[in-house]
Length: 320
Ligand SMILES: O=C(O)CCCC[C@@H]1SC[C@@H]2NC(=O)N[C@@H]21
Image (cartoon, rainbow, N blue to C red; front, side):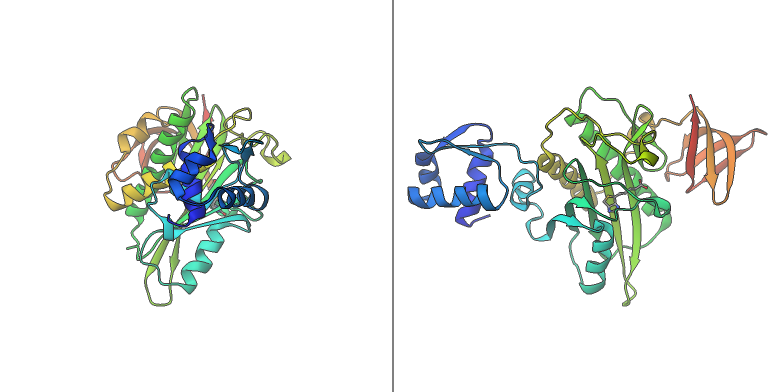
């Protein structure tokens, strides 16, 4: 971050919700006062930054609703400056990640983030409702992925734990739970989902694309979701840029030096010890969830007392 605009953003962000004088900004940037005023005015009027400008030219930066590259970079200590793409609206960050994977040879993990999706999707091709600025919708491309089912399962589990732990820090009063494999629930409602897609390139290499959708403040859901999904908290003015930056930072750190979080996962499971109905392909089975194995697979006990272990499946019902 080194342009004058970025220096100003950085200073305002480090003094978020405080009044900052032109003199402070002058010492920080060495720009003349008029230039400072013009840059701030442009950020406010044309780039959607929320800045209050007082008549005596004091400025206050407010928590921004929209996702902004500079703000995410600030909160993540500029860890992924060149590998972060931020959009207002896309069809799906997951689809866009596939298009980017097709056209480019990536060396580093790359992140695609948007304020809104028109065709967000989840597992089994289901629509993922992604209205503007009330959630977080993003995909991470991990290039040159050695495709291996159990490695993928474990990564999904680790990422689910990372997301839930960051959410717990931001919403300390909420009791988030995990539904195997990768859904995050609050009470009986889904608040977040994770999907992993393998994208095979023509040169034989694979990219892993992890897509994460979180309903933060969404209040109104389409009819078919009203009894299934909820926003975490419709009242809170949450700092989405900061929340996203922390999740991304922890996922990228984990990718660099992986360690598994199975015990954290088990602790937050909403199914262990419960009677569940699991869908496996076209059939469904009633059973009891026994344990999550070291490779992330689920072991259940069927009604005849037999233990069975599954790498994938959808839990369609939990008996409380
Ligand atoms: O619930 C699921 O089955 C997974 C939902 C994943 C949704 C996210 S939102 C960002 C990314 N883009 C998509 O189209 N899907 C994922």
